[in-house]
Image (cartoon, rainbow over all chains, first blue to last red; front, side, top):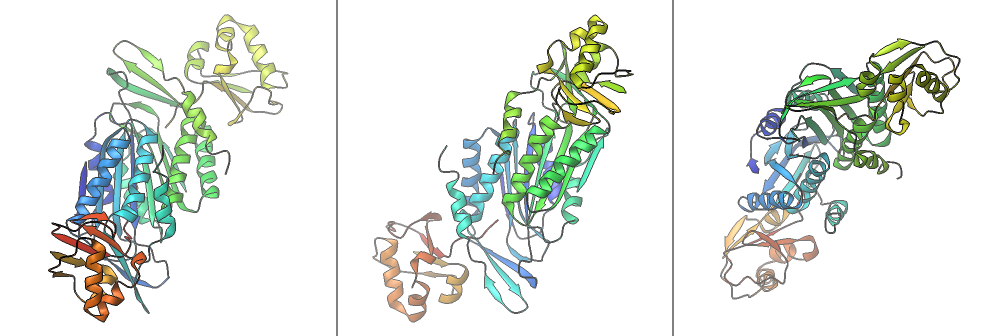
Length: 149
Length: 149
Length: 81
Length: 81
């Protein structure tokens, strides 16, 4: 299990290859990469603020919850902070499991909790505005999927 | 949309990076990599037979079904045939979407159909046996998840 | 018409592909003709629930028509991914 | 105790962190004290449903105890990922 919080960019392909190479007898690897998207067709850049200390703590909690809940060989979480341009990779998660169902569900779970329970805040600067991204009710609702079963 | 059926190995990380770089304004990339796993603790190698012509046709149908069903920017499917060693990558799928839910669901769907509807057959050689892998009822059942909604 | 066999069906029958002249109208009719040929065919086609069939590279069922088909393939359930 | 502010809470209050002496027993008690200070605090804490709180880096709620806490942080709902 590895949690990385960093300012600089990361190479998603290299990270996926290193993660995969480190596994032993895991048949299924799932990765998710989150990329800066220009929702308003005029995004100059995005700034991500975070809470040093709590961020690592929260991500480690989410990752270890996933390890307990599914049959996983490993979990990787990388999340950037600071300034990013459109098309930059913001974050990535990867899961390794013997079975595809566990790898998929765990990655989906990691993303849902990372969205709403890790202390990151996005601010989008466009030509005309500089606004904090509002949280979405659908992201909060997504967490409920994991409260039973 | 790209479907590749090949005998030689592929570099999952490079494929993920190329796929990601080719997208425009897609916020979510999901990848799945399937790896040769030694289930019986004595696997020498795995041979994958396929049905040239029908394989490409079936994979393209599955990929385009996913493009119709979810809001996707792109789909990649790579599947190998021939002889593979434990820890070799067998196949990979990747999906790109504006939203993480679509990217996850479509990748999950691709894998379910690829497992049971693309003409590949695995044969595992161990020290003592050389057997065709039996299809699993759970893989057939997994398809039912996609028949409604 | 070409008839193709894959995986253990190929191994049991002993060849990957053969040209077959048939008047059968359906996959099932073709199966009956093949079964009548030799023991190895009878054996390969003994349990149809363990087999799948594709006509002209589309997965179908044993009731399907083969009239005008160029290619019929028999194989076990797929195990890709 | 250190009180930390993030995102628009930080911007509204005008600083990221300050040392606060308080006898408040709960987060809510601390919020009341801060609100009473100045207009910018009152404004930042006007709608608690738009705020989240962490005590010693664990997400909690406004009824939580802050007795013995080293660090209390206020911020809007998270938007990571």
